[in-house]
Length: 150
Image (cartoon, rainbow, N blue to C red; front, side):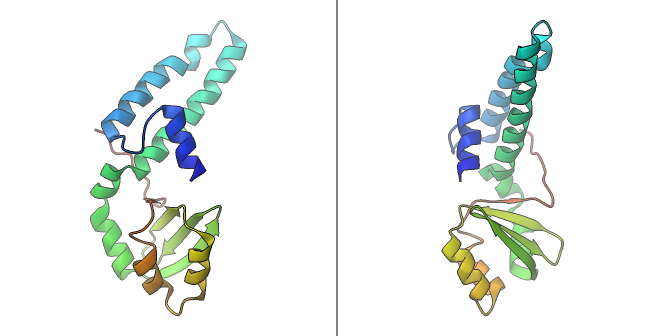
């Protein structure tokens, strides 16, 4: 997904970046682009504020999809995907958002439109999702966004 690639490029990390590396890179970039460093330069301060906001957004997003974060929340994810009913789903720009009866909401990235169409047309969306979506795509919880600190 373009969003993931853009965030990784902005932070200068690879897809194998661990939480500690993300945290270190984030802290260094925050020091570089903190708006208070540009108090004498209004244009520089405005640019720094913009970059700081984007930096915070990128960091939190990448932490939410990091393998370590997903590993820590795997038990809850398995309970939801195995036992809770799908209440609603939405597809936009290769992002599939699934809402479950237990209140959890997960986003799945880089889902082809053909897979979404098959989900919609399946006799049992939950069974289709278990077989073709839950373990096949990068996901994150949007209902319980939690930052994991290393």
